[in-house]
Length: 346
Ligand SMILES: C[S@@+](CC[C@H](N)C(=O)[O-])C[C@H]1O[C@@H](n2cnc3c(N)ncnc32)[C@H](O)[C@@H]1O
Image 1 (tube, rainbow, N blue to C red):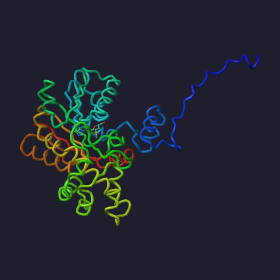
Image 2: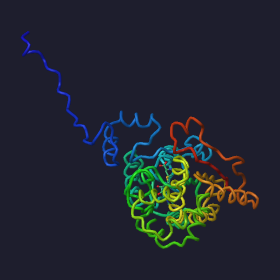
Image 3: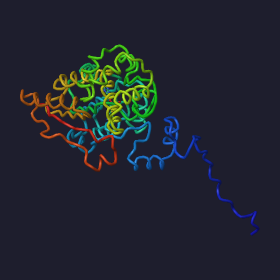
Image 4: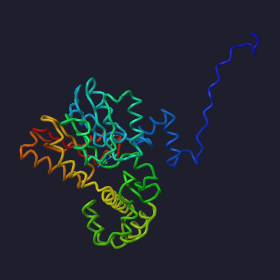
């Protein structure tokens, strides 16, 4: 057969490489596009211990499922829906007949997560998203005409999508506006808080929200100043403590960011309200699991569960805190500080 008559292989569609400088994407937008389109790239990013941008890797999933024991027909509440990583596992276990109410105060990420979960086949009969602060959980339950839940999960703090998007202003590494609000439609950005706060109040805040050992030195250097970007604030922290080594300086920057984030989002008030309301939101025998990421949160949960057990509100609570295994910490470094506690309603 003449060569020109041989059947030709089907042409492989040409995929244009996304354009950026260098070998790997650095900017959030480039990473977002790159990771979004190629499952192989996604797998490589996860295997390297990183979280692909625009996603969140759920922490202590098996342990949380063991504690909450979701069953078909259960009414479940995920107070911190995020990417829906935990929710999707619970949803798969409460069908048929169950329902999950997914709360999140973030108006940017919630619609994306709703679309993702709907795409996985979780329709309105099993999943209802609510844009709400979890401090308002009793109202959300009342709006759904439910007396109490079989299981309630709260995975505190910020999601990877929020941290990795520089426009949200949480990132220590990437420059962006100094905002840090999980709900950008409420409250004031971190820049405004820093501009108005007194050195004494900032000193107290750095200690109470992040156990910052250098609070007395940093507070007068940062309070009342105008920082418009995350990088400006990070540099001011490093400049304020010139004698610290690089690693300690970076830890300090992280603690300052954590303290401001907690203040901007009023996180301790919301957690206190949740812990107060929790017994009234659970059916008898219902389980609650709370995942915390720093001592200020864990102290509150530990005390509320211990007091509840002493007063007969909870029949059982976790004796010991549950931590991610070394394997999980290695595979997902963002899981490292996580602590899980649980309680069962009497
Ligand atoms: C750590 S992420 C949860 C991730 C989720 N478990 C998953 O597997 O994808 C925390 C989420 O809770 C939300 N959040 C934090 N505090 C909240 C509050 N007080 N009320 C409602 N949502 C809150 C954040 O906006 C964020 O999306």
